Length: 431
Image 1 (cartoon, one colour):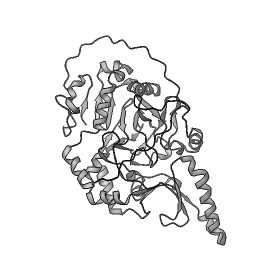
Image 2 (cartoon, one colour):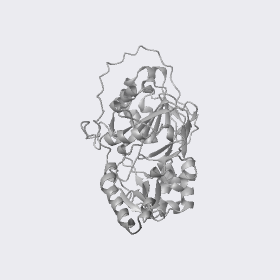
Image 3 (tube, rainbow, N blue to C red):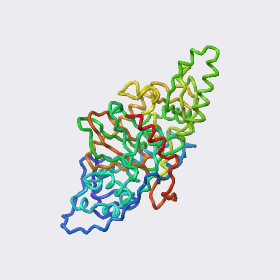
Image 4 (cartoon, helix red, strand yellow):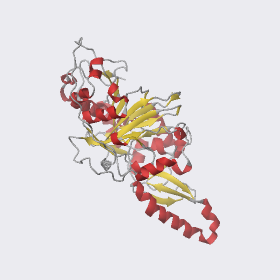
């Protein structure tokens, strides 16, 4: 993976964002490094640190998903991506001792440069910064770079508890009950809500082994997928099931069964589903099991246009959510938490199409063995992420953002809709 230090003047990026000189171009070897002029040691005087606000209960909701997928000529868009080429993803940025010594000031001074590189590459892998080795320092980092924090798009699901609510830092999936569960590629998104950016931080790698974080460029997956498969999925759309509720016990009710099934479905639809704010439809038998009630998202496109650059991207959680793929890799999720993916009319996605999605996804995966303090700053519309299985104790965390503070109109206040109560309750039951 190419590496770069921002110690060089930003002018070296060249006109119109094109890379020249010392900065790596797409296709250069992973060992590419930036040539440095000899640095003169100097005493760095840090500015006084302003106390950061306590964000517990004060985060704005995750923003609405920005859909722009209509009218795509899939074959033509793929050819454009192949012709233009894609830069390395992620781009490694390794701190010099001088840059590390600057602390938060480094990120304040280089915010615009980092923002431009993130737009170009989709992910920045920040290494060698001591500032980001604890929650408070991580908060200082993202505040200094100018990011605006928000709630997780599925905040109430209980999948992630806050590691530090005052710093808007969520636990990644570190629970021992899910250590043996492989998390496939996905955007942190639902049909309804999507975080604009995410910052994943390593505080402690898995103490025994595994747990590597990985990412893949959604533009590269779009480019590399077989045109017939991508076009078929685009035209037929997809629906994602996020939960199963097996109600076989109702079968013993005889003539009362149908009424009981309707009553349970109505109760879940009216009382439980709204808590997750995902526009879920409760349906029986979508997967062929008549007594299984599934919570299924609305019809969505598997592709999207990036909201800033307009480039087409694979924007779909099939690799993680398809049961066919989950059944063929390590999975420790209980049945109630099992997911699946259907076509827009609720017919199954062909196994050969899922195999192809899996193959193209893995071809584009970049595995990131993160050290304490490492941060992966991710464009969540462009780049998908996942996590390998692990053994031992692991502490990775993440914060979500609705954009850059200079661009976001929302103000941190009482925006804790949908709030922390259900999140805390669910997490108290999951060990």
